[in-house]
Structure formats: structure tokens, C-alpha cells
Length: 491
Image 1 (cartoon, one colour):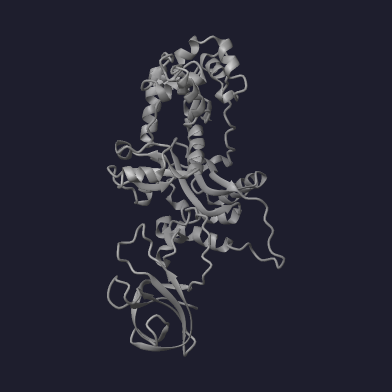
Image 2 (cartoon, rainbow, N blue to C red; image 1 turned 180 degrees about the horizontal axis):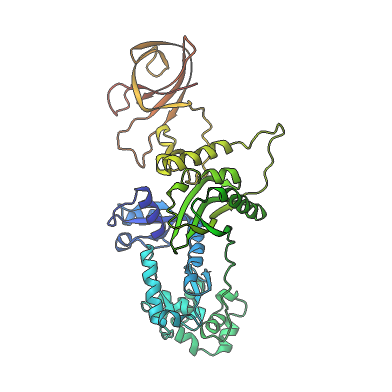
């Protein structure tokens, strides 16, 4: 939920805190609540419940779909970020509620003790916009249980009073244990091991209370296996004498960096040029690519007009070019005629314009999930990801007016196409037409009384093609006579 809100704030669409909000995922019988904000929880919205039931309970509930894939990727990046406290960090998805697991053995003294280390973690996460429940225990299982069911910022607390769900068991297993009267970890620990072994002999390891108890107490090892750190793509130029201008060294740095990227089949999305001055000061310049690139000449061009911003001071003797963000980029074959890759010149042009005027001055059109023409596209920064949407099969004009313009129309029959229309003081006689294509209002966001549209593709006597629509129908009970608008022009 916090990541979703940060993304909405960045886009300027974040709702107020008092608005009940839930994120949904697809369930067996329709969407279910994946996460909810504080206002929604106070209104009775619970995670795992059907969205339709929660809407009946809280009519003001605002619902959006959760980006679970993006959440997993963000959690993996956060695990790498957490290596500032210890080298062994990994994503903890051993239970239903994912989080992070850190093996801080031998690292807590560097932060002034366990309590001070937890406080420092909590503060760092809060500055990044994340709330966290932290716990420190001798085993992975105990830390998981205390972080989710124990006191705030727990340190080696007793786990016996915690509920059975704190053992990272499935919902069905927890329900069975509750029916047997084994509601806490202490109750389970008091049961003879032979009885538990007989009852759950055929259960999966993740649903076996005996295995989970041994993991919690440390009788069964559960080591942390962190993923490998992402590769670092960096080229350095160490100079024998201090210089004041890195221009002459930039092409070689770009070539060396692109060679590393080619070996890893990666392309740079962001670049960082760093110069280290002899007096200890550091200056940095960043650049970005609209598409993954390992074209040395293009990467060098992105810094060409920006090197003058570097304050060289008394000179610098080390230049570093790094690609902190990369994407997969395999070998690509040009066409048989020897032409360049489709779309690449446009991406290079975007990068050059962004370098000269700033990325905030550029926008691009992206598809949106709406069948209303003016809502079917949005404007976003060129670096934004384009959502995968099914293309609209119907033909659309190459040019849409910013606002549909009302026209005067003569027609033979009320529900038929126009015979002629007047637009911008000029009369056009219709010689051919195609349609209608009916587009109904979007009832979930349009105001009551919004009228449907019937779109017609028409051609006048000069061969010009227009896209007109009639708003409403005669006697539809939603207003006076229908009105006609010109919405687009075909090439």
C-alpha cells in the first residue's frame, strides 16, 4: 500500500488519507482485498475479503488493482539496500506475509548494540517512506513470529504466548490446530512430539507444526541464502596528472563500459559520470536512455553539452563512468537491407532532447484502459513503462481534436448518418459514410445522465474523411435533441 501511494504521489493522483482505499487482486470468486489503508480498516475492510462485500460495507471505498509483480521487484531491491547493516539479506516469503530476513550475526556491535541497530533500521526505512515491524531473535522462525505477532521492535522475546499462525503455517493447518485447542506456540510445544509426528506425518514441510517448531527453536537449521549482488558495470580512467576537462577520455570510457554491457547482454538505462578532484571533492552528472543502449557514440553524446557543469577545482585524477540501472539487451540483427533497428532513431532523439531541455519538458502518449476515445491515452514521461493493453480493433483517426467541436448537421432520418454538416463556417456534403459505432458511457466514472455516442466515418465531396459522433438519441429521456460533434480527422 505504501509503495502504491508513493507512486500515486509522484504522479499527483494520491487520494487524501481519510479516503478508504483498498488494493485488490483476482480471487476464485472475483476480486479480493489485497491491502487496505488505515481509513478502510477503520471502516471494517479486511484483507482477503471479497471486494463486492467490502463495497457493501463501505460504499465510499476506492479500489485499485495491486501491482504484485512490482511489489516483489521492489522488495528484492530493498533486500539489496538493506545490506548496509549486514551482508546476508534476503526476501522472506516463507509465510503468507512477505518481508526481509537479515542475518546480523557479528554486525550488531557496529551499530551500538541490538536495540540501537533496530532503531537505526526503523529510522532509515521511515525516511524512505516505509513503515516496518522489526524483531531480532536467534532463529529465522522466531524473528518472523515476533515481527508479525510480537511487541513492537521485539528483541529475543518469548514466543510461547504467540498464536499458532506465528509458526508460518497454512490457514487450513492453523484452523485444524485451533479446533484441537492448540491455539498458541506454547500449547504446541507441550504436546508430545510423537503425537504431532503421527498426526502430520503426510503434511508438507511448510504445514508440519513439528518442523516449524524445530525451525523456531533452532533444532532444525534454516540458513539465510542471499541472492548474488547484481553486477557492477563501471569503467575508470586513472590519470597520472590532474586534468580539468574529461571530454577526451569520455569516448574510451563509453567504449569500455559498452564492452562490459555486451558481455552481460545488458543495455544501459541510466548513466553516472563521476570525477574525483585532487582536493577530495566529488562531482557527478547523470543521464538516462529511453531504451536500453550500449551504443558508445550515443552514450558519449548524452554528456557532451553537460561536461561544462563540472567544477574541476584544482583538477581531477580519476574519472568513473557507471551504469547503475540496466536492462536485458540481446544481440539484434538489422534488416537485410542494412537499415537500422526500428524505433532506435526515435529513442536517440528522445535522449538528446531530454539532455538539452530536461526530461520534464518531454511527454509521450500511452494507452489507457478506456473505450472513450479521449480517455484512451494519457501523457507520461518518456521513461515510463507502457502497460500491456489489447489494441482497439476499430480504425481510429490519426488526429483527434483536443476537444470535440460541435457542428451543425442535416440528416435524412433522425437515427441515420449526416447528409451534410457545417464545421468552422464551411459546409461539407457527405458522399460516403460508415457506421454507426456505438460507444456507451462508462457508468463507473461518468455522471448520471451522460448520453451515449454514435460515431460515423464520413467522406465529403473533396475526399476528406472526418470522424463525427451524435451525442444521445431522440426520446432517450436524457436531454433535448441529440447534438453532433466532430472528434477527429483521417489522413
